Amino acid sequence: MVTLVSSQLLGFTDYIGSITGEGSFRVQNVAVSSTTTLSDGSAIETGEATPRVVLKDGTWMQLGTRTSARISGHNIE
Image 1 (cartoon, rainbow, N blue to C red):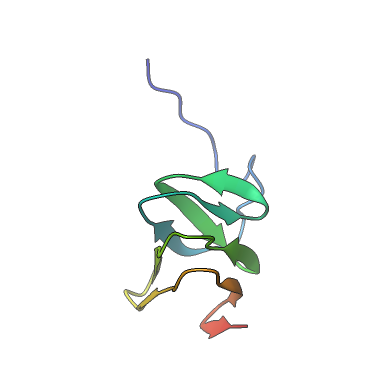
Image 2: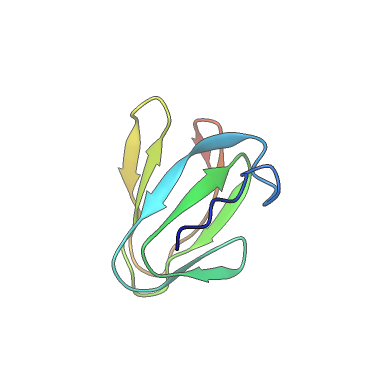
């Protein structure tokens, strides 16, 4: 069975890209173990993972371990 959920129902009204990685990392304080969508202002905590952020225009960045970041448009804090 495949379930499709609207990104608007999940609060992703300002889709800016995705994050993918092996191991566990957190987006908006929710544990992720593979891939998830990023919305404008998403907070990321990598723990021991090194996930890759890919923005919808193709720009990408590899995050290091034990990194905390917030993604807004093309800015990272």
